[in-house]
Amino acid sequence: MKTRLATVWLGGCSGCHMSFLDLDEFLIDLIQQVDVVYSPVVDAKEYPEDVDVCLIEGAVCNEDHLEMVHRIRLRTDKVVAFGDCAVTGNVAAIRNQLGLGNHENVLQRAYVEAAQLNPRVPSEPGIVPPLLERVMPVHEVIHVDYHLPGCPPSAARIRTFLTQLLAGEEPRLTGEDIKFG
Image (cartoon, rainbow, N blue to C red; front, top):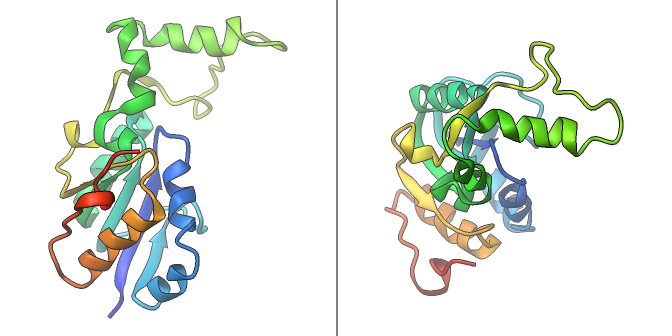
């Protein structure tokens, strides 16, 4: 039976998913070993049950992200913080420097002060999920089994990690594989 793989994109730039796609021909080998059951690159609407491995890109920034990571943890055997935003908060966490309680200032700056047309914060339900008071790396919210650093992690690092994990080995990144950057 194939490994059920999911990838999720939270508060990040999608660079980790782009790096994943840079696996090029290894993707053909990978698809022989996994069923991609949820990802921004497939058309699944609901995060499924019984996922073996989930790569989570991005930090936890809003209530939707918070709900999603809890759902992932309940339904997934191995959770991977995928890239520096998921591992440390990285760029998304810059807004934490504004201080607690100032998350609304982010919306004001983005939707009002920087707007060229219709300066207003969207208020219709479901348009902009309520922001959390602070951005958090994934491990501050749920248990994470593995951290895959990099901004984004290189395709070589992703390949090394996935090859070891899918072979039933404990993933160990060393040398060039672990170097940030």
